[in-house]
Image (cartoon, rainbow, N blue to C red; front, top):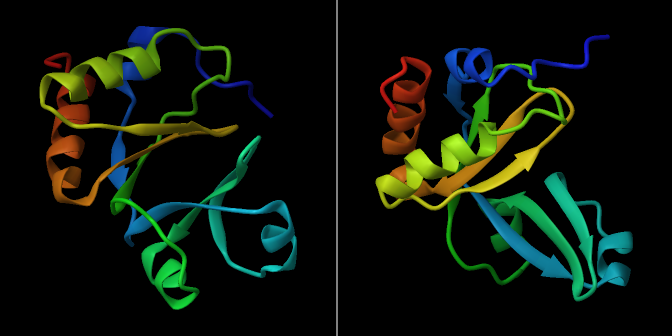
Length: 135
């Protein structure tokens, strides 16, 4: 099992951003609610205020969960190391120049960005430009 790429230039050249199907939302619920639920989650994080979940929008709507904003997931296909330096900053800087917010989730193999659904295609284009050395 590889530890992933750490060289920033190779990381950026290999970004290969792909838009994932589905609209996602961020919600927060109590620990007790989370433990009782059987919701299919995309991601979760335990915070002092509760459990933050990333869910498909339709799951949140069906369960009556409150959310702000609808996001699309972009997965960078490059296998980045969790110890790589600069990749998140480079992506965030490029997206910032285009007025696109991003919530980044670094998983073991890949980085995943959740961007406003209305700006998803533009975000993929911006990230693709980084990979071509034009970002």
